[in-house]
Image (tube, rainbow, N blue to C red; front, top):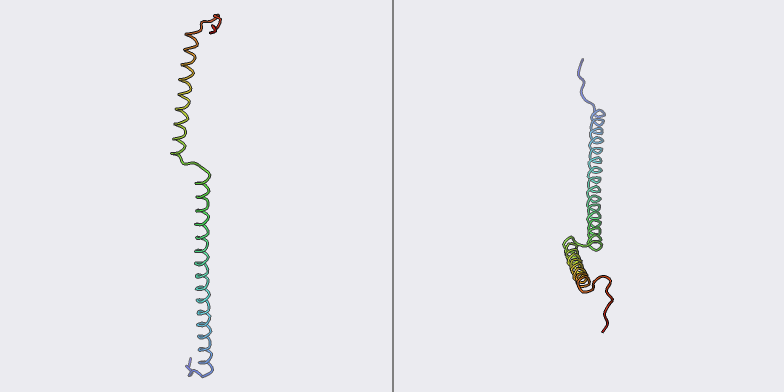
Length: 109
C-alpha cells in the first residue's frame, strides 16, 4: 500500500475533529463542574436547614418536657409529703384509739 501525502483537506478535517472533541470535552467538564457546585450549594443549604430543624426540635423538647433531675427532686418532695401525711394519720388514729374506747360516749366540757 503506497502512502500518499496528507492533503490540506484531510489535515483540516483532522484539526476540525480534534477541535470538536476538545470543545465537547471542555463543555462536558464545565457542565460537570457546574453540577458539582450546584450539588455542593444545595448540600450546604440542606445541611443548614437540617441544623435549624434540629435546633427547633431541641428547643421544643426543652420547653415541653422537664429535666430528669427536676422530676426526681419533685418526686422526692412528693414522697416526703406523703410520708409526713401517713405519719400524721397514724399519730391521729393512735390518739383516737387510745383516748376514746369503743362504745363510750364523747364527753363534753
